[in-house]
Length: 222
Image (tube, rainbow, N blue to C red):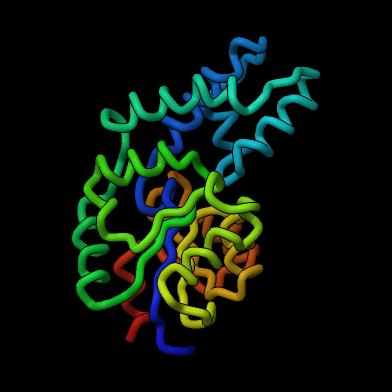
């Protein structure tokens, strides 16, 4: 393996856990259209999936026409309001990300979430300033499983070799994006309620390794 120069992180489910908040925001945003669903149902089906694809699925399933702007007018304020109260982050995450920065690694975030919400999440937990760039589906032509946000993030760091970059992901969609871009795909299970089950899915999707602690990245950096 080549010397690692950059580590590109997913956000939700990897750096922080806001899956419950995001699912609750989705439930609230589709309710005006007569769609009654639950947080568990949304999480089970749509973790890692871009909102455009979620809406497309729900529109077909329920024969409705939910457009993105009205959806976001409910979803985004919900996220920004409840993130400070309900976001979860493992106790040593900030210190570890700080240590990576101090050791000279380039760091990026690539998320299928809404930019305003992702930046709010990272700022609330004190992570925002460690990253060279934060990219979401709002910032690139195609969301994951396309590799766009990771390719753009790598280039923003002045790197042109995906084989020298780790991509850390907790979703099958994200692992597919990493593989599509030629990056080294690392699965992460540390924030998931079913780490063993997720590890199997990530391995099957093509993760070269699966870790349960972010600190285990150090074994790949030496």
